[in-house]
Image 1 (cartoon, helix red, strand yellow):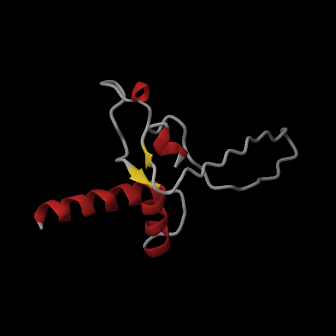
Image 2 (spheres, one colour):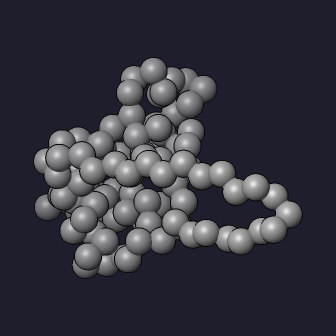
Length: 95
């Protein structure tokens, strides 16, 4: 969701800890849980002619529905979800 809010500037990642005795591990935890009915959309300042819109608007409820019915959370979830949303919109226009 954070990736969609930043128009892809910041990438989402799966939570995992990898032990490496050679380097110090630094991490920052960020959890985002907007109200389920609010639109997830990047700020206007992150979308322009050089940085076109990557993901369609959606709500947390719609993303939750998708992950529960179609695709569990993984690295490709947002892309699969975006494709699914676009298919849903295309189907609405046809009918």
